[in-house]
Amino acid sequence: MTAPVLEVRGLEVALGHRRARRTVLHDVSFVIEPGATLGLVGESGSGKTTTGRAIAGLVRPASGSILLDGHDVSRERWWRRPGGGTLQVVFQDPYSSMNPALRVEDILREPLRTLRLPRAEARRRSEEMLARVGLPVAALDRYVAAFSGGQRQRLAIARALVSRPRVIVCDEAVSALDLSVQAQVLNLLKDLQEELGIAYLFIGHNLDVVEFMSHRIAVLYEGRVVESGDAAEVLRRPTHAYTRRLVSAILSPDPREQARRRALVTATPTQEGPS
Ligand SMILES: Nc1ncnc2c1ncn2[C@@H]1O[C@H](COP(=O)(O)OP(=O)(O)O)[C@@H](O)[C@H]1O
Ligand SMILES: [Mg+2]
Image (tube, rainbow, N blue to C red):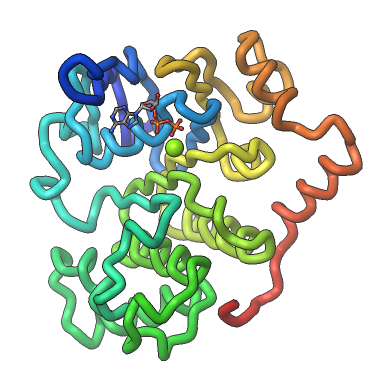
């Protein structure tokens, strides 16, 4: 067995202040192997985003460990972490995750900083990544503020990918995109996984999308992992009552509708310009 690139063990996180403080993650554990995707599903409020934020060093766990390449980073906040190289995050909302007053070139150069590439090489890599997420190369010289929500999200994905990290946490990373752009980005994430061996923690609420992306799935319920295993197994033959409810609530009972959504997700998109 290969050593996991990300291992979360007994993660416990409490949020809120004083009397409002409560434990939102209880004993969350999972591993992700290099080049693999773990889908994390669960209803709204189950603790998916908090898990991603803890892994990214944005909230401090009360206990447990987070091992990146075998190194426990659970006590290191994000600004102490080794930059760029190991872990990147894509959040759902590109409006809050990117400073609109920055130029695209600066957004993309930031994760490359620690790689100390010559400026021309950094620019070349940034151009390549922009093209791969379907944005024009000319975007490099423009300000983030000039782009639509969908374009900003593709930019956020380009920023996460440009340094070729070992792990990317994708928290509802494509949920806000149009279906055709969604399919394009999902296929891009998969292609880059094959090419570069990137591992993903893929958080989503659309189970078709999560299944398409994931090798394994973990189901969160009220801050606990209640079920995990092979992606298709967990969704087709859920053993936990909560997973069964989740699957029946979210999967359409109409098989034609299911087939249609699956086709949308798995279709190889045609190359298209920015929307
Ligand atoms: N800053 C916060 N302070 C207090 N409680 C929070 C905070 N952020 C999230 N929570 C609570 O933590 C729980 C998990 O939230 P979250 O991780 O965002 O769930 P999900 O992403 O699965 O919808 C929810 O009950 C939410 O209300
Ligand atoms: Mg969330």
